[in-house]
Image (cartoon, rainbow, N blue to C red; front, top):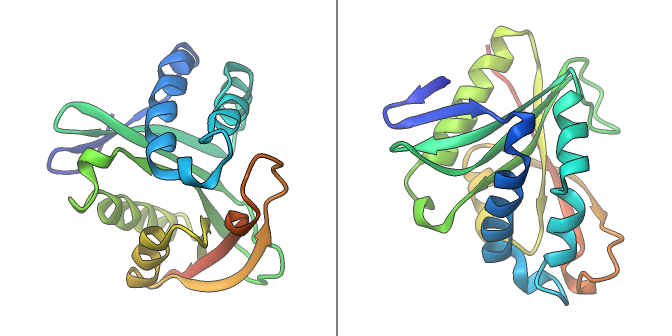
Length: 180
């Protein structure tokens, strides 16, 4: 268990947690992104959080995958990929915040900000220069959050998923230069 702040911890996701992680993401993802999909995101959750995909992601040596714990309850997930570079960004040492999802009940409590601060400090200690992430352009709350925490728009991609509504496919790539 990693202590982030008072009442906020990270606990590594293990292989035996795959079914629980799937159920958690079905709840969290559906709540945040159901309006993006014809099927309310069911296909995406099945494809990205299947046991096979989770087990594969847990085996990636450069990745850390955590449950987010707040006041002794699991309220989300947090996945980091060390050394993954954002195409077109030249700085040498980059880290990607691959996933951060928090349940509706803890939105606005400062947990996301504390997680980012912890990750930034850890990345600086490891000698990383850039922290980057993808965020849905149509998820205004997330874009505003990252902008407030000094992330800069770099580029975007359009997701190819058939069941996703066309107007929701734009994914912003944002980054932050880490200050030592």
